[in-house]
Amino acid sequence: MSLKLLGEFPDLKATDLQPRGSRHSRRELRRVELSLACPDARVSTLTAELDAARNEEAAIEEETGTRWTVVNHGRHNVNGGAWQVSVELDEAERLDPERLEFAGLSFTPSYYSEGALGDDDVILITAEVVPANAGEDAQLERLIVEHRSTLVDEETYFPLTRIGIAAAPLSVRFGRCLWQSQERKPRRHLVSLFPCTKTTRARAVVASSRTSRVAATPPASQSRAPSWPRL
Image 1 (cartoon, rainbow, N blue to C red):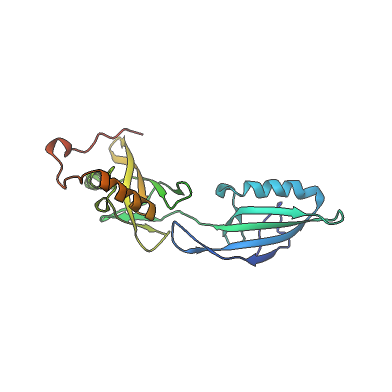
Image 2: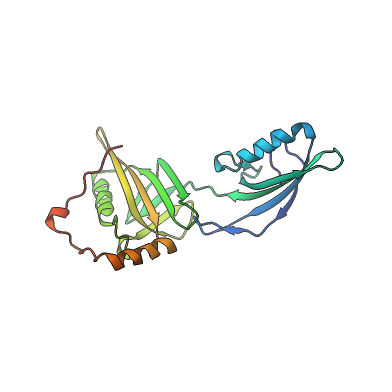
């Protein structure tokens, strides 16, 4: 294993730990424990570098392109010699889809983020997409109206395929969605999506016990798409 630390590639001893499952792609991500020696004069700099790498934006990159975040690190010194530094690393997952596909639509997002909300299994996906034409724009708006609900029941969800992240589709619903008009072009849409998880299913059961189900066909006064705020 070759990692760049302190501007160079030091000698490392790497031990594989029990892998962890990704809540995003469901694939196994590596976990590694490193051991290295660091001179006393540079140990403070190394500590600061490792602390920064706890954040995925400052992840340490391997020569193979794999990125790693620091979970924990420590050091000890015997008889005033070099510090022996131990580091626990988690493989950082690249969540950068080539395309998003759902309901017959296919988009290459100009912006994409996918992050966990709290310590449970709830994930928030945010993507900026631009339909190719007015027909796609209307279809996307219709889907948002149909699959965005405060009740969060099973009928709200639909399959989303994130090409480049996972082959299996993800069952999602729309959250808050914004749009911005463009001169002589289709609107830009900033959509938020919530995957169906154990936590969201549990919340749906609680909600359904308190709220009567919404009719499949809304009254005429509710049939129009909401007026979304602009970006």
